[in-house]
Image (tube, rainbow over the protein chains, first blue to last red):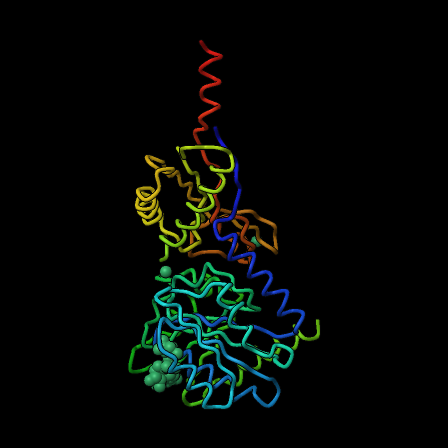
Length: 219
Length: 126
Ligand SMILES: Nc1nc2c(ncn2[C@@H]2O[C@H](COP(=O)(O)OP(=O)(O)OP(=O)(O)O)[C@@H](O)[C@H]2O)c(=O)[nH]1
Ligand SMILES: [Mg+2]
Ligand SMILES: [Zn+2]
Ligand SMILES: [Zn+2]
């Protein structure tokens, strides 16, 4: 006998993600899901973003890591609430992990939660967490050909941060080739070149994020 | 990626649906998988086979995957066009397009054996 199911495979994840999204909307907190490779500068970018926006918004961070809490400690050292999720080997965060993590946060008094997803350009792309936006970071040393090798993450991102631009000449990074490839994959996404550890270019990126947070809070 | 995790979810959902229907055997599972997702066909097959060995309900079950090719509609000129994973801009006017298909991760249907049903059909035909 044949049984028609027509059931999304990620049904359970999607359902919890949409509950998360409703909760974030009710609490007027914007959730940013940051996707990138290991070592590309996710934590450095989060720290620079906090620096740029902390006077206007109450911010918290959720750190997704396979093990350890060194990143959460770097955030806490700045006086910002940080929740560590150890995925115990899983290669991406799922919506139920976010649901549990936000339980530890005071949502009524937050405007922005930044999620540092597990360092991985593949796995997190198919998983909705209930976020307001997914943004990806590519760092210059990874090479300008990455859009062609990992198209999915460049397509799911609403904005793309190009980090470590201070190393552009050392790595022979062809910014135009990079931009052309991104435009083919995701023509609407703005690209923000930054050097997170030097604060360079961070203001334009923070301005984009500020507009997203305001749009959500005023909706 | 995490094809094993994905297939574990599929096998759980299918197992529940099959048991609900009173089935004692799953013969076939049909999935649609969009080309614009991160799931890889061979890895899904491999994970499915591994999982089937662990559950008698799935012994000998087939996995049928339909890969769904991307299709978009231009938001400027309305053209509906097929494309590959890498080129999503309208080939006519260069406008932004909205994806119509190509991101599916879906269980379409399953085929199962229901013991009572079989006896009944055998009785009828004899
Ligand atoms: N030159 C340069 N180095 C940077 C920049 N941003 C980050 N780094 C360095 O890159 C390394 C990794 O930075 P992190 O911020 O820890 O990167 P991450 O992506 O959070 O790393 P994991 O969480 O371990 O995957 C550190 O040594 C940083 O100092 C930058 O803009 N320029
Ligand atoms: Mg980090
Ligand atoms: Zn994975
Ligand atoms: Zn067009």
